[in-house]
Image 1: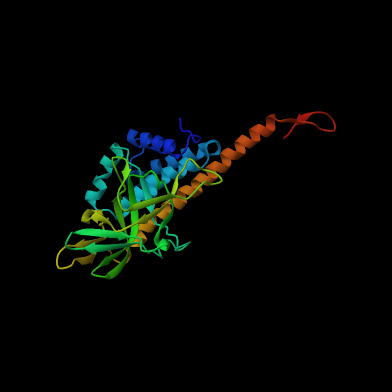
Image 2: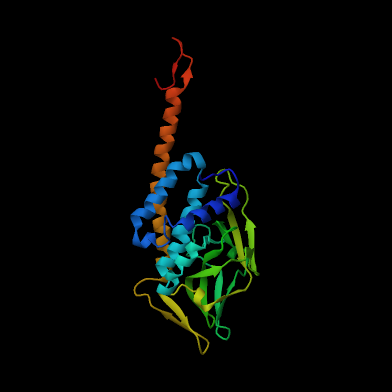
Amino acid sequence: AIRSDLGYDNSAAQLRALIKTGLLKLTDLRDNPDRFFEAHRLLAERAPRLGPGFWIRFTVHYNLCFGSVLAVGSDEQIRQLDDIQQNGLLGCFALTEKLAGVNSGMVVLTTADWDDKAQEFVLDSASEGAHKNWISQGLVADLACVVADLRVNGKSYGAHAFLVEFRKDGKVLPNIELGDMGEKTVGNDLDNAWIAFHKIRVPHRALLSRYAEVVPGNGGSYVSKAKGFTNMMMIGQRLFTGRVAVAQAALTFTRKLFESTRTFSDAKVVWGPQGNTRLTA
């Protein structure tokens, strides 16, 4: 049974266990969307009792992080999702930055510079404003879908997504700095982090490359395979499916909350001028 009263480490462990069962596959958003949205609805039914934390953790993992891999990852990168699921690895979606405010995706200060000699990308948060902010599941994630400004030979090519390893043997990798955003009014079984990258190096394969790639050699060459849209537009699809899931969950949550409130009021005996009566009599 899912519990929300034992802290975010326990909540993360519950999601890991659920992922490993394969009840919902990381590819179901693409291959079986009805099942994807039904899973969100079923969790929303329990949210009045559990709070919103686990539902948010769930959709960040399945929709935002690995849904982005489905949207902009290559076929080979998508095939890796089976191993990620079998190992129960958790993902977060590192888009929002401190300075961006509501302009997430339009303002991306985190940079990813191509080092052609090493054939690596160098992720860096050059200022506090570039710190990723309010990243759900960020304190426990094993992997992160990081949105950064891709630069090759000093030229910016805009926001692109990278699947970045966060932990090895349970420990956060060097040059990744994490901080807790602090206690919230509700949903404290969900961790929210700020994240700073200090020139962390990630391999060439980290760039999700269905619509764009960097060809090594002679300093590196940027190749766009997108026709009539930007890479960020495809990443933004996950924000859309997320809003659909949130809207569906809000309706389900409201109905369940009404049902429980009505059940309470129907049973509640109160004093009245003509004798005791039930609250909703």
